[in-house]
Length: 487
Image 1 (cartoon, rainbow, N blue to C red):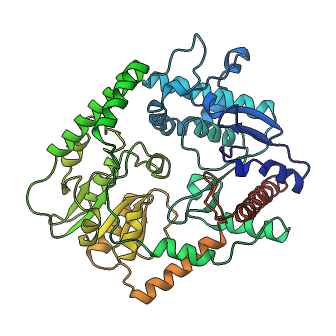
Image 2: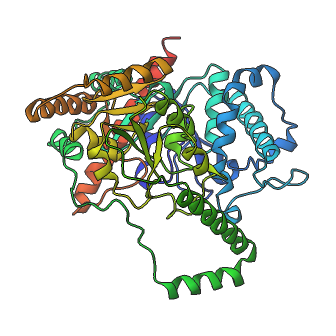
């Protein structure tokens, strides 16, 4: 089990054993200092990120050929996920002992990291005779991707919770990324847990809260909020970094230089002339981003999605593209010549990263999105059709067209061009959103697993904690009974 570091969740393993005394829990902690109630601790995230487990050498671990054959299809995706490892503060991670070379992010480094992680998790699952794996989120940081792949290769069931906008403080439940958007498992588990008395009912008014989350978006919310500190503060901070950690300072400078080159490439790639009259609009997702890397399927880079959609457009239509508002502020450069490649695509029109995304969306005939964004939700509320690539949880909303193939892309674009998308009046849209909220409320667990909401009193916090612990444990045990007792 991997349930993060929130103290509010520390008693979940105890609750699970109280429900079913046959259960034994093996935990993965964030760090050695984390409080827990697991029966046994396997390792920590700090050790796992670079596969710095001493057992790799002491147990002479290796990847079994039959396991590699079963996980090879995800290797490319996991190597891309290691972009997140490259950007980690390496001083905060545990590094493998000699003779394993230091991780620097090269292709060989990533390949060797994948092999070490696969070998380690295969050994762990076999040694401890693990029957099932439960995680608080879908695998997205690297080592958890290897764990999930190895678990599936060994025929071990895997469950993850997932909290995503607009329904913050709600947990979806899926047994694979491919199942995202299918609410049947969550609804089944909640129903089963309730029938056995393992589930505490939602708070009053949760449905109204979820409706407000999806239907109220401020017209005045700025599209860009960098929150930059003043110049003197940044100067002192950088000088301090130079004196305290020269290597980290040098690494930061290289990122800034790469970011500058990426910004320059974007500026030089902007299209000339007036904004097209007939266009689809796409604001890119920032990268590296778990949303695109995992739920975006084959479109993490997004160049392929832009090329596919643009190729379906008539000659007098354009796909207007702009950079994410978050990309530059996060100091995350795109790869070399990224924007030059985007601008070279036929029927693509690149606008300034400072352009107003909401205005461009409202003036468009449709919005192109990867998995999900707040802008996609705003498009639904503005009755602008949304083309979504990859896995998404909002496929049931009116005007959302999910695309997983070239033919689906062609059909979706054709429907937009011909004006054959759903056209709802305000009441119809509200009714559809109400049905959507009702279905998602019935299939999600109330509460947050990666943070603790603020409460006015300690009594409120205790009630929230008790309900969350009970419901997470009840759902987990209901799932274990479903997948293990049915075998």
